[in-house]
Structures are given as structure tokens and as C-alpha cells.
Image (cartoon, rainbow, N blue to C red; front, side, top):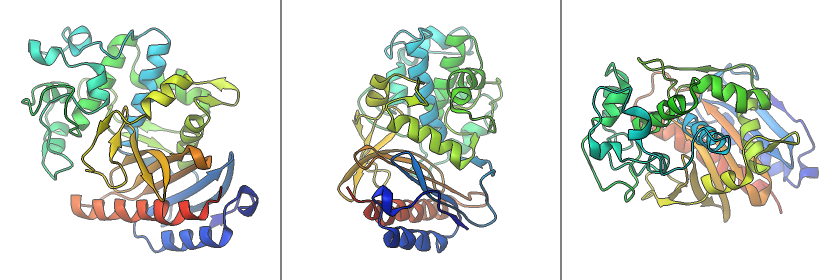
Amino acid sequence: STVACGSGSTQGIDADLLELAYARARETPGIRSLLVQRHGVLVAEEYFHGSGPDSLDQVWSVTKSVMSILTGIALERGYLTSLDQTLDEFLRPVVDSLPADKGRITLRQLLTMTSGLQWHELDGGDDYDRWVTSGDMVQYAIDRPWASVPGTTFLYNTGAAHLVSAILTEATGMSTLDFASQYLFGPLGITQLDWWTDDRGYYTGGMGVYLRPRDMMKVGEMFLRHGVWHDSQIVNAAWVEETTAPHVMTGNVMPFGPRYGYLWWVGPGQGTAFFFANGFAGQFILVAPDLDLVVVATSAWRGLDWDSAGAQWSAVMDVIVNHVLPAVGD
């Protein structure tokens, strides 16, 4: 059922167009939630297919954007000194093998998906499955052959994003979950969550966080407010700007995401600039600063193959970009 938490019209949203967007969502197989928030007011919220406000959703690669936030916090608090720090600095003591050339991969290259490591994932390749079942997800990612010169070419790589979590753990002396709970989730009031770990005990940096949709909304709203939540600066405004700025062209491997920041997608749609966290099969936190708007969606994923997950992702993104955004006035 739709929960209208504020009058859509008073927030400058066309109620009829928004209802059409929700009607479209109801016809979208697999969608589990759609939340629309403007000017800090939750204008509309609806859950589908047995989902509800307290449902924990595996948000898949939205996890990557969480890792980006944690990296900014670690920089601000002095656990990290620079995005030019390397794998060598943090992972040489813990992995079995780190060739010198791989050791020079920087944190910045991991955050922009320009590590240069070969990885077949968005092209339907099997690196993701091989990585998850490898028995050592850190070493598997490091052991990939070179595909390009580091820092030059975007190649989406969940294994490389996982290395950010390993680096964060080694840099802070805390698990990624403990660090997140202290500096991000705790301050945002996010207490119900889950997070996968790898064989070494590192929390997975590329996927594996489970969040409630309303808690995803808190993350988006905090970014919309330049890192501020309830008068607390969670992460500095400069980092929010830098991490959501377009640093590399993606070659449009993801519709609506022609550019990439630091583990955030950056793209226009309906004439509006936005950035978004997104995950397999249709998990989204989309922030449109010029519209003072955040949209969150979650979707079912179990049993979906790559093609059907991609089709569902596109259908949910279509609801957001081509139906919700046009309902929002100036």
C-alpha cells in the first residue's frame, strides 16, 4: 500500500504524475519498494510483493557506494592519508602473493574502477562467480591479469571494490562493519542490517550489505545535504562533491550512467543531473541535487539469471528516471 507521508503537491510534485509512476511500479515484476523524498519530506512510499518497511534487502552493489563513504570518513579521520596510497602499503603483509606491479595499484584506481585488472562481469562473464567461490577473494582479485594500464580505462570490477574493504580494515585496525557502525550507520540511526564476509573475515566491499529501504534513504538524504545528518557532519562536504563528480567515462555500460565517480554512478536523465548507487536486479539510491530529491528502490533478485536481472534493473530505473523525475517540478 502507498503510504503518503506528506502532501506531494506541497513539495512541488505533481500528484497525478507520481501516481502514474507508482502504477507503473506496481506493474514491474520483482520491485519490492519505491520511496520518493523531496525537501526532506517522504512524499510517497510503497512496498510490493510481500515486502514491507522492516524488510532487510540485499542491496548488492549499493555496498560499493557505502565503501566510498567509509573511505572519505577514513581519510578525514586520518586512518588514510591519500587516495594515492597503494595496495602494497596495506595488503603486502596479509596476502600470499602481491607482485610489485600489482602493488602499485592505488586506492583512487580502485574507487574509479580503473585498476587495470581484467574482470568480466558486466559483459556477462564469470569472474564474479569464480571470485565468490575462489576460497580467497582478496587473492583472486589481485591475481587477475592486466587488461589495461592502471588509471586509464573504466572496467567494472566487484573484486577490486572488495579490496577497498580489505584496505580499510588494515588501515583502521577495525572491521569494516565496526568502522561503519561507529562512523556511518550509528550516527544515521541504522541499527538493522547485515553484511557478508569473505573467507578471510573481511566484510565484502563490492556487495553483501543488507539494508532497509528507509535506511537507504538516510544515506541518500545525508549525501543530498552535503554530508550532514541532523546537524552532524557525517562525512565532509568536499568528499561528497568529489566522490559524486564524474572522474571517468564508463562507455555507458550502465544505462543512465555514462560517468563514474568514486564507486558512485553519475548521469543525466530527463534533463536533470543525478548520481546513484545501484545494485544487481534493481537496488537504487538516486540523488538529484537540483531537484532536492532522493529516490530509493529495492527489488527481488533470487533465481534471476544475468539477462532477466538486467531487464528488471532497466524496468525499475525506467520507473525512476522516466516516470518519477518528470513528476517533480522546479
